Length: 631
Ligand code: M6R
Image (cartoon, rainbow, N blue to C red):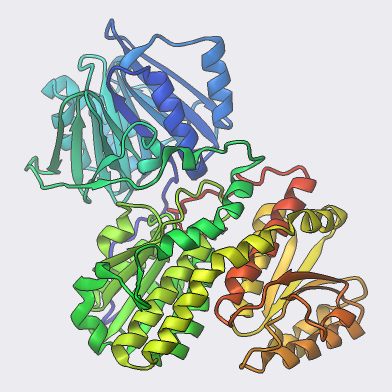
C-alpha cells in the first residue's frame, strides 16, 4: 500500500496484569494486593512465584478468578520470602487452565517467568529449544513457557538474570512484558517490555513492578515510566533500566496522583456502583486548575503551541466508550472552534489509509492509555507526520508517552470493566480542548468561553441530582430483567449517549441493544418497533437553540404509535414528553453540551442494575477485559 506508513502491529496479545516485588513486606500480600487491583486486566487465571529466605522458589497458580488462588494460598500457604512475581491472565492463546496459568518455570524449576503479550515466533523458538535441549519438558500450551525455558538456559550460561533476559528478548518477535525471578538470585526481579505496559514503583528499601500504577499505589506514589524495548532490574535498593543492548537509559520519575483507597471497593456492592457515584468528582477533578479567570488553562499543551495555531482538521480516535466521548467532542469542537472534526474508531482509522499531514491534529482518547488499537493508530499518525494529543486517565501509560502532548483526565482509577467515570472525565477534557481551540482561533468571545466553563463547573452538582434517581432506575431494571432487546435513540449529542447506553447494556447484561440516531428511524430501524419494545429516548432540552426537541418528540410519537414502551431521559418538567413516555428520568436544565454528561448516568445505572438483577458480575463481564490490548 503506497504511502501508508508501516507500523509493526502485534497480531494477538494477551491482556494480563503483572506485578513484581522485592522488599521486606509480606511478598505474598503485596503480590495478591497488586493482582487484586490489576484483576480488571484479565480474570481467567492467576498465579504467583516467591523465593523464600532459604532460596527456594515456590509457585502456585490456578484457573479461575483471583479468589481461587487467594483461597488456596490461605488454606495451604507457600513459604514467605522477599522476592516475588504475580500474574492475572486473560487468555487468548492456550485455554484458561491451571497448566496454562502463569508463572511458567525454567532451569529445572529454579526460574519463574510471567508474561503479558504474545511471542509470535514461539513455534520456531520451541523447535530450536527442543533441538538444542531435547530434554526440555513442556507442561502447557503457552508461548510463555518457551520464553521461561529460554531464559532458564541463558541463565545457566550467564549466571546473571538480567544478562539472560537480554539474550532472550532479542530473539522474541511480538509484544511482551516479561518478569522473571531465579532462586539463585533472591532479591532480584528482572523485567522487559516491548509494546506492552510496565511501570516501576519506587519504595524505601523495596521496589515494585506493575502493568500499571494500580499494582503498587497502595505502597508508593513514586513511579518511573519505562520506554519500549527496555529491561529493568530491581533489587530492594536499586533500579537499573537499560535498552535491549544493555546501555543505561534515562528514566522519567512521576508522582502517582491516585489515592490507594480510590482503587478499593469500600462498602460498595461493585466497583461499577462506586465509580458511577464518583462521576461528579471525576468532572470536578478534571477541571481542577484548568479554569482560571474564566479561561482555559492547559499548560500541558505547550508542546503543541505552534501546531494548534495552524491546524485545519482534527481527527479523534478511540474505541468503545472512549469513541463516544470523541463523538460528543466533535459536536462541541466544531460548534465552538469552527474546525472540521472526524471521529474514527482507532482500528478502522489505521487501515483506511487516512490522509494526514502536519496541519492535522490527531486526538486519541483512552482511559487505560494502553488500548492496542489506539496505541497503534497514534503511532501510525505520528509516522504519517501528524501531531498527536492524547486524553488518558492512567499516568505513565504508553499512549500518553507516545503522544506529543497529553491531557490527563483525573477520574482516579477505574476498575470496573465498564467505563463510567472515565467517560465523563474524557468529555470534560475534550470540552476544555474545544474551548482552548476556540480561544486560539477567536471563534468564541471571552464571554462565551466563560459561560461554557461556568456551565461545566456546575455539571458535578447537576450530576449529583441525577444520581439521586438510582432507586427508581433500579426498580425499572429489576422489572425489565427478562427483556431480550432494548433500543436507544438520540439526536446530536444525544446520539453518542444512545450508542453508549446500548453498549453498556450489551457488555453488562448480555442483552441485545442498539443505539440509533433518531433521524435514521424512518430509514429502517423503525421496522423493529413492535408492541412492548422498550426504547430509551434521549431528549434534549425544550429550551435548546438546536431545535432538536420538537424533532425528537415527533420520533417519540412515531414509535409510541407502533406500540413502543418509551423510557425518556428528559429535562425535568418537560411537558411535551410526559404524555408519551411510559417513564421519565429527569435531568436538571442544562446547556446542550452539559446534557450528555448527565444523560449517560441513568443509562449506566440501568445497565448495571439489570445485570445485577440477572445475577451477573457487573465488574467483570464475560469475555471482556478492561485493558484491550488485542488487535
Ligand atoms: O482504555 P480505553 O479507554 O482505551 O478503552 C476503550 C474501550 O475498550 C472501553 O471504553 C470499552 O468500550 C468499555 N468496556 C466500555 O464500557
